[in-house]
Image (cartoon, rainbow, N blue to C red; front, top):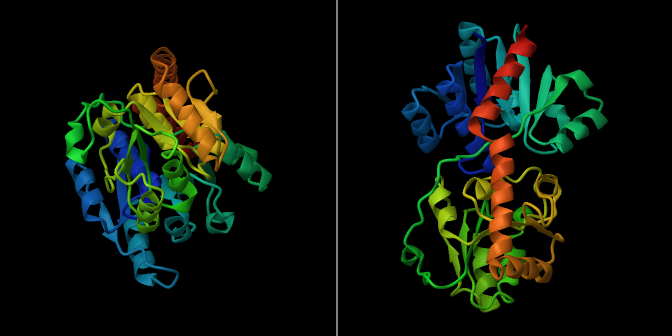
Length: 341
């Protein structure tokens, strides 16, 4: 059995952090021997402990946080892993060159100066892998492994929990409230969606800006800010369609989450959704930064139940064939066996 050590210095909220937690738990369920080094986070640590993983929590400060690096080296020297898998720039840059294989997982087009000590890089989309190759990373040492999301069927909740009538069309969007996610575009689209309600599940720096925008354009009564939601399957199960309006989205976990719950997905045509979605077959794509076109696509889905069900069915089929926990965990373990031998 390969001995694995994972290291992450992620933020409290974010797609990469959510996937790290899912993968760590999935690997543990598959019998993977592992140790986790992570930035202190009470909620994430408890989720891992509930899965019989005892994480080592460290500060993971900035460049001159030598204490974290010293503690990491002590753990690594004691555990003697075959593979160290690091996540994102900060954790990766703190891993020293040692008697182990160092792989890093990239969920975006990161600056590779932080990855100079790595032996292998893992991209969660083919486009990221192509970026690595264009950046002169050795072809045989960059690998594509996608993400997975929770496939357990959600149970619709009472819409009254968020002051939403039962008889109205309901759309949902999820993610960190950041400019890249283009929730401002979706809120502007709500002007054209007169009877539709929007649940926006997320938190971040753009909250006040988005709240003000909804008020200014007269849609605040129909836009419900739910805050950050770690377990989203019941929320998605309640909606009529899932929307991913991102300006920049390397993959788009939310597309997978919509498919997993058999919901039609409408997305702006940024990199990840454009890779995942075949327009008109398993979802709809609209131009980036175009609220009118986005509203038109949403109307097409909400007003045609037959088409909506067909899109959802096709999306679920692709999800089950490519993006389930068992498939992705097996791909990681196969890679671990390959690069450690």
